[in-house]
Length: 255
Image (cartoon, rainbow, N blue to C red):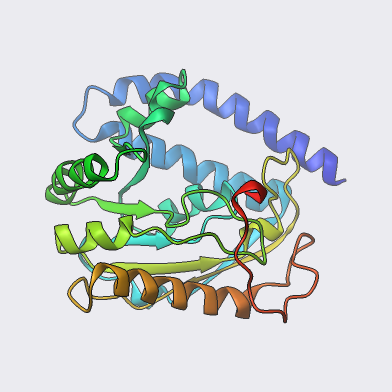
């Protein structure tokens, strides 16, 4: 049954994507149209995951979402949250390494949707890119989504939280909204199969951009997210084997 559900999901996703592609092309003629159509595409995939695969979700702390644009500082465990943040938050763009723009179709799509591309190998240049592109996105009323660990981290572990989100918050005067979830317990990294269950998402109160230094803001985000991770983990088939053990940092080679 699990395999059949997943095959049905992938088939429906492929068919919908092909049928929806002309609409995406037409949306290029409308200002910000591509962002709205790709968000619609993401929401359809999220619906298919819920109703075909059986991967549901529940959200705690939605009342913490501020009225104006902010920086979403989100745990990264799977591909699920790249779809789900577009459901829970207003129109947004992601921050990603510029190398991804070179990937045919996928990378082109990232660039068309105004993803903030940064050169991670050159911190000084990356800061300037975040400031310039982030200022433009803020002026357009867009939120900015950052995965502070920089890559997907398996459940029960944490990566090194980088300072990019906090640096952007300080430079652009945008508050940080921390987000914790346990999607990786149902959608393992690089897995064809997605597993039924209920992802728990917790949205924290905004962390004011002027409430500390860049390092202090980063530490606040990390402390809040990892504390919530410890509370909600242990629900899915790929949950950590011993969820009561303090979350260890994952070595670079394990990512």
